[in-house]
Each structure stands twice: as C-alpha cells, then as structure tokens.
Image 1 (cartoon, rainbow, N blue to C red):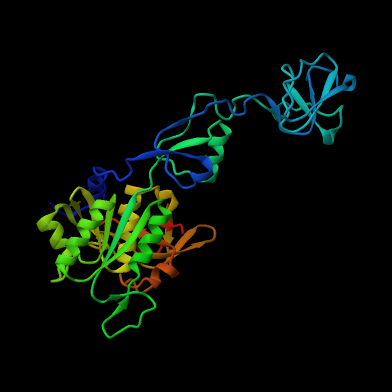
Image 2 (cartoon, one colour):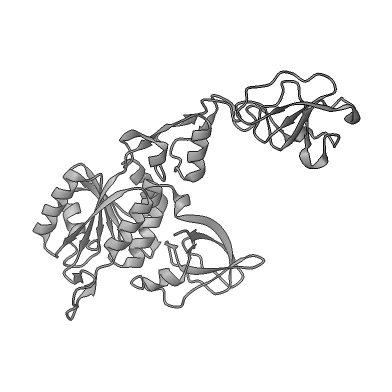
Length: 382
C-alpha cells in the first residue's frame, strides 16, 4: 500500500480499475448524459446535399442580373432539380436543394435582380464528411452531441452501462434528517451530497448506514461488493479508534493507497474488497465533496460537467500548505477580468462554505496566493 500519494498518483492508481466497462446500445431519446463507449462515425455527409441557407433565388453568377427570369420553384424536401440554363433563376426556399450548377443565391430581400451571393449555398459535407469520426469515445452525450448523432444518421448509440454505486455512511453520531437530535448527534448529509453528485455523473446509487461496529461494517462491505460496481464510504478513514473502514480495508482487503497530499480531504483510502473497488472518503462534508471532484469525477465521468478550469486574480490572500495541493473555497467575480475572494472560515465541516462559494483554488504544494496573484481554479458547475 502506498502512503501519502500525490493527486496525480492517486488518479493513476484508480485508472487501473475502470468502473466503466459494460456497454449497451440504446435509443438517442434515452441517451442524455450517458457516455459513449466507442467512436461514432458519420453515416452520411452533413449536409447530405448542396442546399440553400436563405429564401431567394438560385442563379448562375455569370448571368447578367437584368436578364434573370424566374422559371420554377424549389422547396425543402424536393428532389434535386435539373441544372440551370443561362438567364434562368429558380425560386428557392431555405433548406431546399440547389441546382447542380448553381453557384450563387440572391436573397429575397434584394429582389430577383439583386446581388449574387456565393456563400449562402451550404455545400454537401462541409460540416462533416461521411465516414469521419464525429464524436469520440468517452464523450458525454448532452443535447448538442445527441442532435449531431441524429443529423449524421444514427438512431441508436453504444454507451457504457450506468455504474451501480453503494454509498455507506459510517458513524454512531449520524441520524436521518428530520429525526429528533439527541445530545452528541448530527444530521447525516454526505449520502445526499454523494448521491446527487453520482446522479450528475450518470451513476445509479444506493445509500446505506453503518454504526461504529466492525462486524456490521464487514457484513455491509460483503453485501455491497456483490451488488455494486463501486463502493463509496463516508467517514472512518482516519486514525481514530472507531475508524473501521481503514482498519478493515488494510487488514482484510487489498489496499492500494491511503492518504493524499491535498487539503482539505487528506485521508482517503482506496482498495479492493472481494473484487469490488472501494474508495473511503473523509467524513467531513467539504473534504468529501473536494475528494469526489478531484478523484471520483475524472475516474467515473466527464469533468467538464462538474467544473471548468480557469485562471483568476486574487483579491484576498490564500494560505498554502507544505507538500500539499490546497483547494480553498473561492467566490468568482466577473468584471473586466475574473477575480476571486474567499470566505474567512474554511473548515472542512462547514458545508455552507460550498454554498456561498462557487470555485476552488488549485494551490500547488509549498505555495501561497498573494493579493494580485493569478492562480488556477476550478469553477464549479451545478
């Protein structure tokens, strides 16, 4: 087991255990936010024939404008018309096929004898040629890619099957929201956080609760390993006497790394439990959120759905950390340039700080951010 690994090393280890492996073919109308399992080639040219981008007339640019005579009309859906003869003009509608030898169009606003415009003819295959790779494997299918697939002739698409993820929240102090709080208890929120993030990532999640009992947790690990592609745990990964996730994985599982050089979110542990990957996240909600964004998202989904990497100019000072990448919560301000300020309370248990902020700094190890510095940041998308 490797200890105190960098974020890049943690991602490298995770990549050896791909979650997205099973595939299926589904209709386009059911493929929103699914992930392509192979490259998709164009079955037809786009557009499939030369056509008009305007309402007007199809003409020969060499004709004298004053000699043009309208002889027939072409509508969208018509077959490709005959070639033009000198002096002829075909009335044409948007999307209609142009005559084979037409090299210009006249806008209806300019009248039949108006200026010839060659750029208004949309040429066959000018967007995508038949056989060309239109979308690459691992593309997240949002509205525009789905429309593109339909345009190039696909009615179905091969995608990765949605991974099944078990979320296990640990801790005797946790109670269900809405229940009466007794002294020493807190409402459990990480399962809500993680299940919503997993839904955005395209996964199917199931929530479980475990008390601070090693035998009960072991049984739950066994149960989830049989039914899940991935197990995510919340809490129980640090050095406490009741941190049984760490203890079980190290003593009875196959651990691969424990602790990452990052703040917040330093104590994650990763390994295998009876053939199923298990990633133990910190119990503090901000730490759990940051680790999910930095590790789980690149492993399981498309980071562009969750954040955009940007550069910002700091308006407040940021403190770094020795040997650790620091993710401070930031508020982005957009004027002439992107600037960022930060909340004073950066505690890893303060989930409200993730509500009032909309970005995370990326401070490399052993660096701090001074007022006026330009730094990298993750602008979060929700």
